[in-house]
Image 1 (spheres, rainbow, N blue to C red):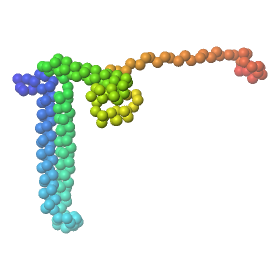
Image 2 (cartoon, rainbow, N blue to C red):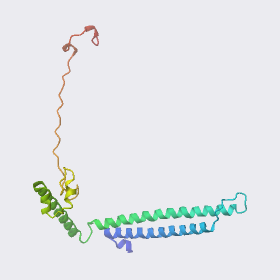
Image 3 (cartoon, rainbow, N blue to C red):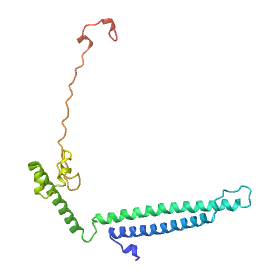
Length: 206
């Protein structure tokens, strides 16, 4: 059984992927630096004169320009590849730091702790909203709000009181009653005989 087969948890597999991404990023960065250094060395040894068409140095000059262009292009491509692997590794590490996996040894304890944090946050938000609706800014000061924060809180929208959080995991969804259907008036079709008198000869089919 190799090392890959011995990894049974999702966290271990993601950690291995992040480590691989970091290794690939390091190799790509080293390749980019080597290509850039080679291009810089060639540029330092080349003259600033344009290519002399028909001269015996034309072929060598064109080959040097082509190799210089290849080194610079490969350096840019390797730099982009290194940045790509770095971003992927950072995303995996962020997922590892903020996610509780079901196969974690302490998954139940971690979920209970996270639920308690969210419940405490919602309780605090409800108390702040009630204090602000009843006593205004003075009620928030009694709950520990700083005087420097109150001016910015007072300028918020009237639809949200200072303690109201943004819509998230700790904020329960707002339930709205179903919208009543509007009844449309029904119009009765009337025949030609029921409307104002008209010329019988102009009737359809007459």
